[in-house]
Image 1: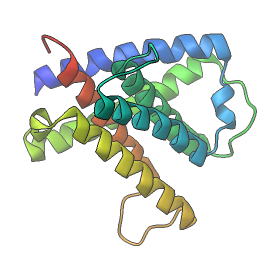
Image 2: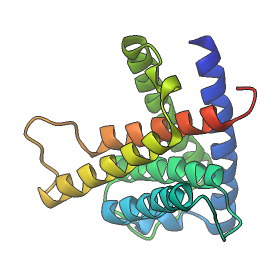
Image 3: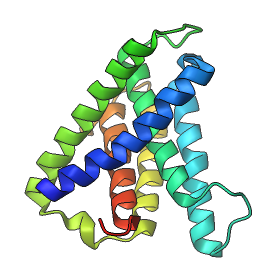
Length: 180
């Protein structure tokens, strides 16, 4: 498990660096995004990965790893948006953005650690294709929850689905990283 924690942290450090740099360049323009818009951004990235996997070719330079990193960062945005609520034009200080990002990642990592304990790191035997399919399924679940006005009878909420999306994308990146 220690090795997994180190790998997880390494992946997240790279994602967070991109996130902070983009926030420095663009500010917190993402604050205007409603949940469905965040879901659609993740959907576009996951569907592109699936298309590349199926066609075994790509025409745009950004690779699969970049798309998984984007999925992680958009899922973090989704969690932050749920916490802050009321999507709006709002500029947040970079220090606050960093803190909010880390809080969501800490929660996702704790969830991963708990599930890894119970599932025995079964994800290490899974394919990158499965992670993409699971991410797409989680997005469909979020869309269904939204169509139910955010209510569920027995299932986890939107936040839990975002956390799973983060962790699936991290696992895919760990497995695709040489010497991991």
